[in-house]
Amino acid sequence: METALNPLGAGYPVSLPIFDGPIGLLLHLIEREELDITEVSLVAITDRYLRAIEALQEIDPEALADFLVVAARLLYIKSRGLLPHPESEEEEEEGQSEALLRQLQDYRRFRAAAGELRLRASIGLRTSARATPPQIDRKLDLSALTIQKLADAAQRALSSFPNDPDLPSVRSYPVTVAEKIESIRERISGRAEENGRAGGSLTFSALLSQSRSRQEIIVTFLAVLELIKQREIAAEQEETFGEILLRSLR
Image (cartoon, rainbow, N blue to C red; front, side):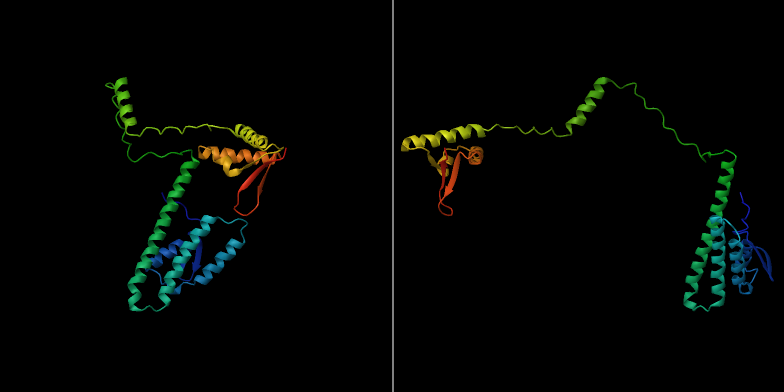
C-alpha cells in the first residue's frame, strides 16, 4: 500500500527550470539519469525548504527525516558528478552508491508499512493474521502413567545427587568461664592458707598447666581477664617475657 507523500517530506514541491514536482520524484528521475544533477540547484531547494519550516509552529519529525534522506542522496549524487575521481576508487564508490540506494529503498518500504499499520489502527484492526498457522503438538498420552512409575522416576532423579552433608555439631565446653573463675579463686586462697598470710598468688603458667585442651586454656584466660576486671586479682610481670604472677587483691 503506497501512502501519500508528505508536502514537507519526500513530497516537498520543487520548482526549477528543468523540473516542477515533488523532490522525491526529482531524485527518482536523477537516479534513472533522466535529469542532469549538475543543473539542479540544491542550495535554492534547501533555502526554500528552510523558509517553509520556519513559518510553521510545529514540525513533523517524520516529514523532516524523509526530506533529509532525499536531500542527502541528491547531495551525494551531485558531489560525485562535480568532483573528479581516481580510477582506483570507482569500484568502491559504486558500492557505496548502491548501498545508499538500498538504504533509501528500505526506508521507503518501512514508511509504506508504517502507513499501512496506522491505517489499520485507525479503523480498529490491531491484530494481523499469521502467514502460516502454527503447528500444534499433539497432546501427550498419559494413560499408561502410574503413581509407582512417578515414584521410580523421582527416586532415579534423587539418586543422581549426593546426600546432604551432615550438619555441624555444637560441642559444649567441659568447663564454663564461671566455673573456672571459682576454681582460680579457690587455688589462690589455698595458696594463701599454705603461706599463712592474707592474699595468695599463683603463676599464670601454673594455672594453665592443668588445662587439658585448647578450649580450656581459652576459658581459663577469659576467667583471668574477668577477675582482673572485677579487681579481685592483679597480674604482675617483673621483666619482659618473664613469669606472670596472679596476686589476690582481697
